[in-house]
Image (cartoon, rainbow, N blue to C red; front, side, top):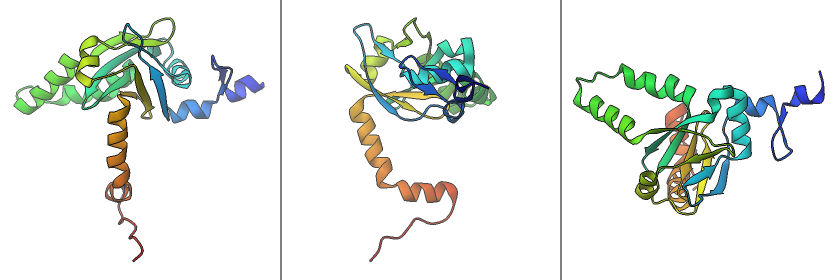
Length: 179
């Protein structure tokens, strides 16, 4: 086995992407520009993860505006996680029908262009108040696009209750502050 096989493929920036990084999925936060056409470049590491994990299908994503951000799902993840859950809902239930309506009327499928950019529809840009800079964040098997100020607000709220949230999710009690 040669070094390249052991550590993975070379990313466009010359950095090796290891199989471990690919398995870990989308992690981190990157500040990127939104161009005049509403396109956002997918960060290099994320592009390589898309390619190595999903092959040809990795160039197709679903943009789903949820709250103050856009969730960017690789199509296989959308089909497996989101669509499969939505299809289990009874369309006779008005609440389920409303959720179905929101997901399918606001979401859009896009193909990355030859420079690995995704075009955000102008309606989403306006609705979310996206400016010329956005954060692209990793969420294991999908990405999110945030206006920086909304990300900071959400991060501040989450960080303030971090230990309590972890305790609630994983059991146990939050660490008590020293008196």
